[in-house]
Amino acid sequence: MYEGGCLCGQIRFRAYAEAGWPHLCSCPHCQKLAGGPVTAWVDFPLEKFEWTGAGGEPTWFATFPTTKRGFCPNCGSLVAAIDEGGTAMGTTMMALDDHSALTPVHQSFKPHAVPWLPVIETVDGGS
Image (cartoon, rainbow, N blue to C red):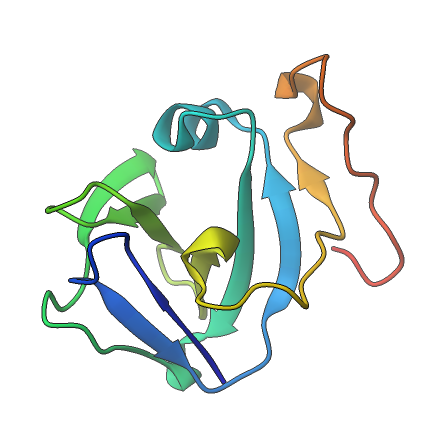
């Protein structure tokens, strides 16, 4: 089981599953939203995921035509992403209370990666 949430604690979640596909994203949207060169993501099956905090679900913002990102309307923390019709909830690794056992296995949008940070090459088991 994993738990996590935003900086102020209003948006909280719980996942009753293993974290899937730990990866970094260098797309321009993740870079702007995170204020950094990458965002680290993991996925959880929707049927094993729930919002548990007093703030309920995050506020959603569409960044791609079929993708929306969730952030806390109080503190601004980026905590989640979901694709239209998707079967998994993506959460940022840093929103997890304990992300110490997770290592990214892939980096998407490599052409947008900053030149001063080494790119994560896909390892066996990555998508």
